[in-house]
Image (cartoon, rainbow, N blue to C red; front, side, top):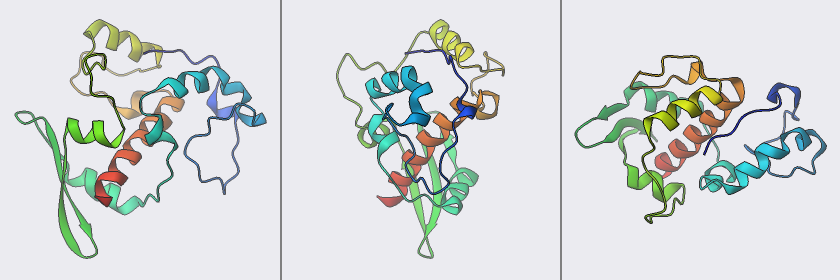
Length: 163
């Protein structure tokens, strides 16, 4: 699914003590401008990952990405993270992502999209990097989508580290 931002996320100011990564309540005055995106987000299959609260620590995430490697043959991401003084191997597979995010596993749940659709969505999301690259850079997305990507990444990493 693709959508287009009609508003600027930077106009919403949150309380610094607010510890929820996503708020789906458009009745909250500061969230009223996000009504359209909130309706879209409620339909996403990754809603659980975005709304469940987790304690997130910067150092395990930095260590994970510092050591992360993608194996093209097996299509998995592997890394080493130190937990309580001992190194632990982390392996992220498509199946693990599906389980953590509660993706339905049926024939109506796509895992691949046509290249043209993906590139069109990237442009609608304000992506200003190379579209023909095998990897998309988070830094090339507009601010609201950087936030969305960060939430997704943190929710997946935190659950894998805790397993």
